[in-house]
Length: 377
Image 1: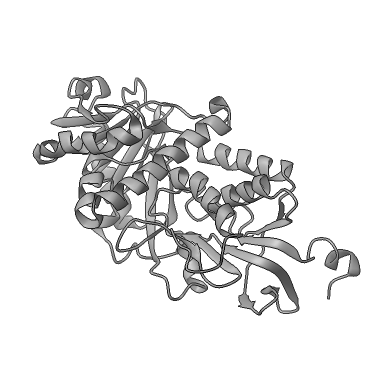
Image 2: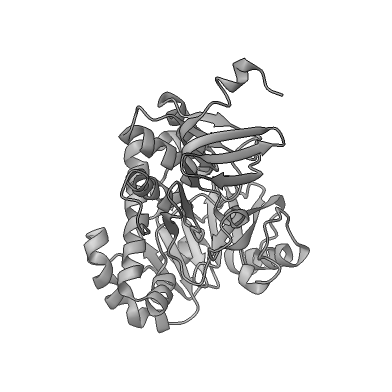
């Protein structure tokens, strides 16, 4: 049982409770407190620190690769695709304007994509025309084959550049978000698992222990792939992203963030080391999981990719391996909507949480006090 001191402080009723302390949960908490400073906001996080994808990603500050936007436009149409790209683009701008870039290691080092053939280049002019209203650039993408040798990508035939993308330090960004939350008087319960969520006409009740229930006027689910526990009617497919990191490499030429095969492979330099992740399309079914593990099959595949595509004729030593859990669906639009009178969700960010979360937080701040009828993004 709790004491009266605990009941009236840590476990008291709140105006808003957010489940999940990743990028989406923290940006949502910040946006709500900035818009409604009088509201009490509590963030509940299962882990000792934020996990999921937020602390386990590759640290890309990107909004879309050429082949990805071509694929998305064919599947979703241009309007949905451009709406999504604009939200990502604006989200990255917000990050740069919100925090000193040196404090989060934000570097506009350029985004690149390796192409296996010239077919996507046939769509280059159309894509640039569609993106101009978002980026204000006539050529968001252009061929930069002269950089192939500069980066040491000896076996690459075609390299496409996007100068408006870059990289950041995901851990430092999360720390700055937590600092801002504390400044705004957002409260936290870390290491706390939500067992059950129920709703009546007055409150949402959140059970966090057999004898402990928190109450709130509004609850926002921000646990991405792990939200399926409570959002059974939503299409949320977990997608594990495996990553490896090399030891320092002498005279490393590579600099920037790189995509390959519609973004299924992604790599970058981290100082003088190479960070490489992805390839889940080589084993889709196994990677539809919320288990934080790495597999011998995909790690071997990534190592082979590293030695043949990124660092041909070299034998780099692997220093670290890890995985993160993303959430996917049949299309890439996130699920940001009102679930009931008092419950909301912002989930399924399709591996783009870094860029999407700053703007999704703003959408959710508007949504929680709007007319509760059929709201969704």
